[in-house]
Length: 111
Length: 116
Image (cartoon, chains in turn orange, red):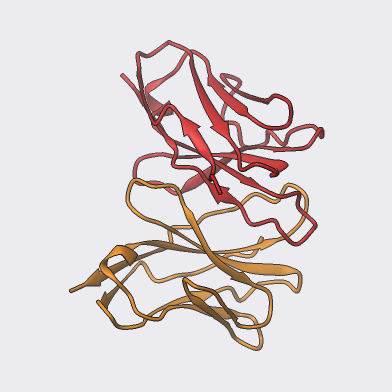
């Protein structure tokens, strides 16, 4: 699986959009971009994933650049409960492909 | 619907004792993964089950660790002769069968193991 690079930490004001970047310059054509988050003392929570096109669900939007070398997770209206570690993972959807978690980005939403 | 459940939520044991951790995957999910997260560390893959295929045990740190999955559903992770470095949060995840576009893994709340 391709390696990802994320900032160590970010702050966001409550009610504003949180934009979390991820670089994956060595991503290959069949690798998906996945985002999970982990709120303190809980298991990782799936947020969203995509291959080439931008994706949106009830939690967030995922913007993938045309060359697929980077992506941005957008939480449109961050709340205090969105404070968590956010993990960007690239992986191939195939048999037995486990998730490889990096250090992630610590997002602090402040009032 | 119900998510992945794990039990116990917390376990304190003495060094040298054996422990069993249980995972109930989401109904209908055929793939089951175990991970662990040591204090301040990232998540580390341990083992993977898919249907009746042989499990992928490549992440198990030592032969003291084993896991089984009975009837294609519930899984038990067993740690024999526990050591203090085994203290961690043990996380279970499940998904539909990979290769069918529904491979997203959903995680349970974890079991927090403390070895004294």
